Length: 322
Ligand code: AVI
Image (cartoon, rainbow, N blue to C red; front, side, top):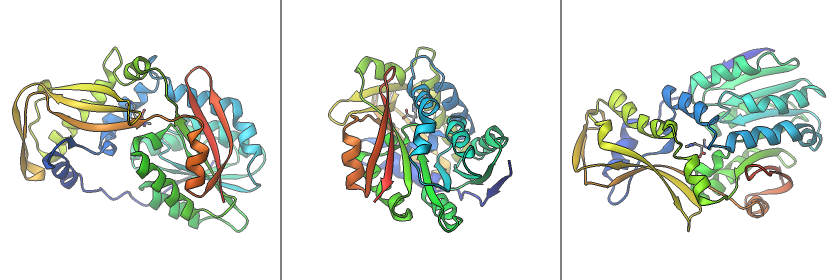
């Protein structure tokens, strides 16, 4: 019902991160968070409905089928905070189930102002739900949301869509532990994790037949051209999705199709590429269902319940802070 936006996300050091990632010795890299400018966020929305990319549908199916069960396992009086809410479409199920038993405050935490605005208009009409959005990085936003909790109110943190998979495994665990430090015992986290599946299916999910994921990846170069006054020639790079089996992850790369150099005025540098050299832009780690309870224990939670999708292997995991 009521909606508000709190604070402004401060622009991180895009120019510095681009310079560091492209001038580092060895594999060139760009942080995947920069894929999500306005165009990138819109392209990700399209990816989420592609036939090859079953991840978002599996997440939504599980939430739609099990929201009542999930909510039934929570303590009474819950404040909901969502890390990287996107447009919030799949969160509706949880909020509606909660609103049947209590007035609910929902705090979406999102660095994309466009996604945050859409989330507020998508979910702002649910009766007995108030929205307080935070245009901030995850942990800053969570701290701010948690500071608004009332006495006897428990936090439910939503970390859906397997965004955890975009962290390196160690960094993902460190992140869960950092979230745990903000929680009190008995608070909950609902964690979505994409599971391992046959490699051809995974590669197709990240290299779809109509090229939306390719556009999503290449858009990062247009963003650098536009925001950092660079001269990337998009025709000189090709999207590539590859499965790294030892690390159990899909990696997105941009492959240079020829020897070339690119000037990035805003980062005060010129970068040389050899033919076939790549820029690594994203990792998407895949999990086995039984490794989540162990990961939860290592980071200060117990896994209270797990729901699995049979069409597209994916797990929704309810972790309780110990
Ligand atoms: C947001 N994240 C979980 C997506 C994923 O599957 O790793 C991002 C994505 N990249 C390419 N397609 C989707």
